[in-house]
Image 1: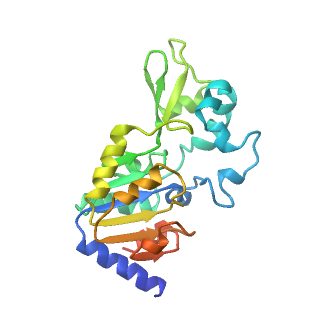
Image 2: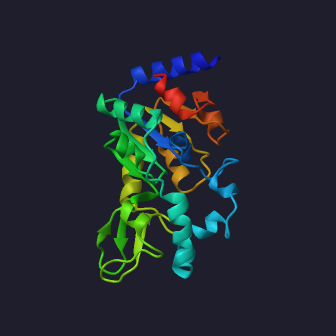
Image 3: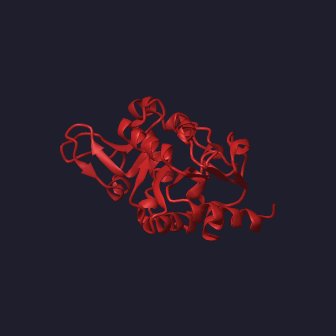
Length: 240
């Protein structure tokens, strides 16, 4: 099947579906200039004093807070990034009543910036930050501008509302994502290696009609997909 035929098949699936759910990862935002974690040019392959997976852990945040924020501000706060064709198409599909939810592993908030309303952020968001002492909210711009470790006006330490390694996912977010996936008639998986659990395990709740995988590299679900497209997610979705 040619690339054009695969996109044509995806169009057919979208047209006949009324409860589409999109499950995405870092690859959705790479076309917006945000590096992913596991590709050859991703964060895991860049030079740093500690491995990124160590820095982005709860224990490291507690014991090496200053180093955590040095990395976090430089590598995780990509506030100039804009939604790409994939984000925009998904928001459009929701607006016309085709797509019921986006389930994302990303923390950049680009789906909402594109106009998506029902977004389950499995790993939180850089745009929500709370004082650990008094609970006051701070936006991402404040975190980026803060010198050293961001502090609240009460003196408390501010922590991003993102799920670090060693931390559990939010139960309410999981419930919403599972319900959306379980009731979907078309599940589109895009821009994710499906290597991060428990997030990747949520797609096992899908029992609908068609499973589509759009990813440049192979995933564990390729053999289960009704349609497999190995290309950039933005290029593919803009084609429908």
